[in-house]
Structures are given as structure tokens and as C-alpha cells.
Length: 113
Length: 111
Image (cartoon, rainbow over all chains, first blue to last red; front, side, top):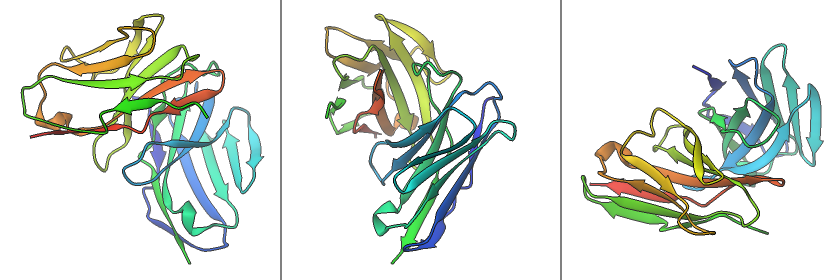
């Protein structure tokens, strides 16, 4: 069974601080890694994807991937109340982009004003 | 910005009835998917569809489920005889060069 594990939270972070979200995956053959944001009752919204080991930055968001440790993380800098949501980690087995996504259970993040 | 459209947004049905959930994927995308999310649980893959046939399906996608692309734009998920445990959000997604895009979902409630 290929699993994606996340701490369900809730994770509470003061406004303006850095939020750190973590994810581990069991399938060592996984190649593509995604972070989605999901507001209650809404569909997942893509924040970032990463394929290579190391860091990838996009605005206030940084994704970090360590394939040897089978670990991917998301950092949110200068956290805003609008960042309060559930963050879903998802993986696929290839870089082709046409594969199914395997999701974690998500981490609920609350930004405290 | 192109989007995946799902209808209806909410469907209530009696146990044992057939339901059809509809999706219009992004027009130049070639890969289509259905996922579901039971309340409070994770998003689960149901089925993927490419070149007018199923390319992969999960254990959840049993004989009660079917998918169809009846014309050049619609992509449907049919549940033949709904059970209480089919109550969930159903998300359609399509994938192309610009990546995965999810629809806004259909909330299915089986009573």
C-alpha cells in the first residue's frame, strides 16, 4: 500500500510567522510531489509542485524535497489569515504528469491574527 | 483562466437510485480523472481515463461505477445503485501541459 503521511494538526501559527508543513511518502519510486490547499467544502487548489531534490521557491511558499529521506515539506513565510486551510500533500509515481495523485490526509493550518 | 466545470454542485438521492455526475474538462486536456472525498477523510483516486478508455481504476471503483465521455466535451461518472457510503464530495480533474486542474466538486448525499 503506497501511503502519504501528514500530521493532521491543527497547526496554529501567529500571523507573520513561518508555517512549516511536513509530509512523508512510502513509495520510493515517487517522482512528482505536489502541495494543494483546500478550504472547507472546496476543491484542492495547487500551490506548488517539485520534482528535484532541494528547494523550490514561489513567492511566500517554499517546497523542499529530500528523496533519500522520502520527505517533502512546505514553508509558508509571512503567514496571513487567508492561509488558514487544510494543506494536502500528493505524490505521483512519474514525472509525466498524467498519473493518479495519491493524497495524504492533510494538515489543518490556522493562522492566528 | 480555463476551468473544469462540474454539475450539479449538490445532489441528494435515495439509496439504490442511479446518479450521474457530470464534468466538462479543460478543452485541450487529454487525461481525465474522478476522485472522491468522504467528509473528514482524504481525497481518494477512483479512475483515470485517456483516449476514450479507462487507464487505471482503484479498488473503490467497482462494478457499480462507470465512466463515459459521451461527446467531445463531457465526462461523466455513473453510480448505478447508490449506497449510504457513497455519500462524499466527488471531484473531476483533467490534466494537460499546464498541469492538473480540479473541478469545484459535486456533493453527493445518499439518504
